[in-house]
Image 1 (cartoon, helix red, strand yellow):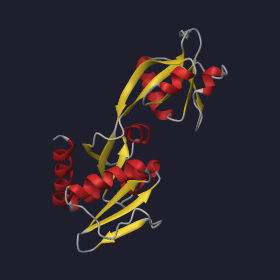
Image 2 (cartoon, rainbow, N blue to C red):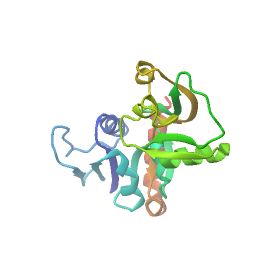
Image 3 (tube, helix red, strand yellow):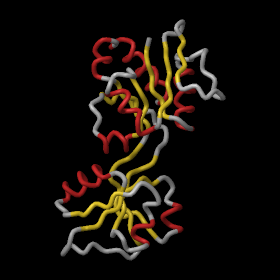
Amino acid sequence: MINIALPKGRLGEKVYALLASVGYKCDAYDENSRKLVFRDEKGGVSYFWVKPTDVAVYVERGAADVGVVGKDIIEDGSPDVYELADLGMGKCRMCVAAKNDWYDDTSRPLRVATKFVNVAKKYYAKLGRDIEVIRLNGSIELAPILDMSDVIVDIVETGTTLKENDLKVFADIFPISARLVANKAAYKFKNSEILTLAQKLTAEVTK
């Protein structure tokens, strides 16, 4: 039995469809059900749906053998898991953005608004830039508009929200997409099954 954690929502549904297409269909799965766990003893697969930011926690702690999580969450949380495959879904990027006319006043710490605190700290540490982190959980774009921050570190998909608020991207930090991750102990004891799953997914998304 392979236990798979998927993120709730559209991405999780897409990933399930991909898994089902390469031989990991779960006959018990019902997309209209509010159940969180679906097991298929005959097929040897069990799925459960969790909040996207929690997938890596379930995998790291062994409740799931594998899971699918965004690269942003991996980079910010540094979970102790193996990253096995890039599924090429949910593509976007982690960026630094600010007002169109912003310039970096290096005489003082840079005020950075973000919910990705560790990403921001690591990025600016590499640049040798002192920063003051302002942790926010939503509407990050408001911070520079209201002069609460100089820049934001956030996920950018199309850039439309930035443009509509007179902001723009000043730097790309890293590309984001959905990644298949594995629990380290499960990878050791279910190595053949997990590698087969990873290889089938990789073959499918790279067709």
